[in-house]
Figure (cartoon, rainbow, N blue to C red):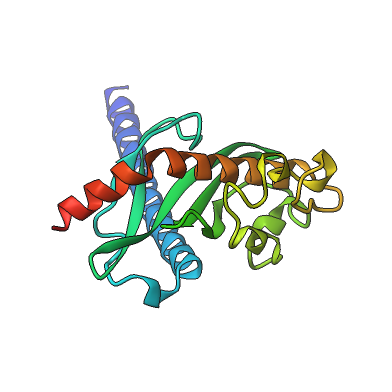
Length: 205
């Protein structure tokens, strides 16, 4: 019995160790994949000639559960051109997607116009809600050039809700969530632009 107990104990220890190693390796791969997706999205949102700093090197932490939808502080990336802020890219969560939370990158130029929006991750229905991905549809590009005043307050909704943005056939919840989250990101930018840009200029000064 003692021998059997030792064998079982060693087996349990080995199994736990292997599970831990697999989890660690998986977490590392996920983190790497997320970073690669983020780099691609950043490049798509901002033309490389619109900034001359390394966006991912010096992120600042922002936190606003109401306007940004994130429970914890998230990195924001400030693009600089000749030492002056040219744009801000925020990580935003749309908590009310059809399949759950939708993670977005929202790029806003210094003048308050949207440079672009990209979906980082989501669990929306394939063939319907996944049209928020640029690879599946051009819909996400409809935000480019928009601002808090264009469209007006009422226009920041899907057309089914008498707004300015198209919805998907058979899928209204997903675009509605993205439009709402993007609008809130613009509101956050409008409220905090000066302090965010001032802090970045000071840290690079």
